[in-house]
Image (cartoon, rainbow, N blue to C red; front, side, top):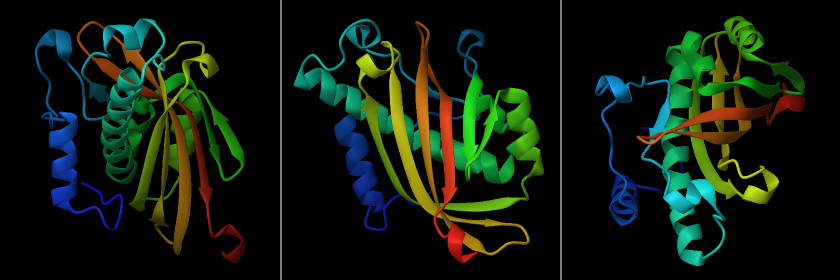
Length: 197
């Protein structure tokens, strides 16, 4: 697991998981009805009212929604950067078909264009130092369950010096009766030390 906060120890992470009811799931396929790959972020089904009505209605509902967003975001970040560094050809599986990526101001849209773009990048080694997330209010997303995920850290692309980066993702929930698969709708990546390079 990648380090998200320099002061967040393994004990803190385990305590959070106990308090939130989070459980690690093996990254293997299950029954034929629940097959998924390591390149998918899968969580338990959304609460009934979370999928169909106001998620911001009560503070209890909102806390549950925030906890679920944090669990999905943490799992997503682990999978995304591991896939980027080690299995880049599978990276586009994390994106919606019409997803948009803004990479240092350059727009890429659609799965074919994303695959072509990722193929042009040199091999990488990402280190995530910070992760933050929050649910996006349903009024802003036409009732689509959406989470904003913000990361920052360092990246070294082969043949280049190490850079600081910041990346923002909008994840949307694709719900089924058995689980929820999170996909990237929008992704914005930016070097933070661009002017000095």
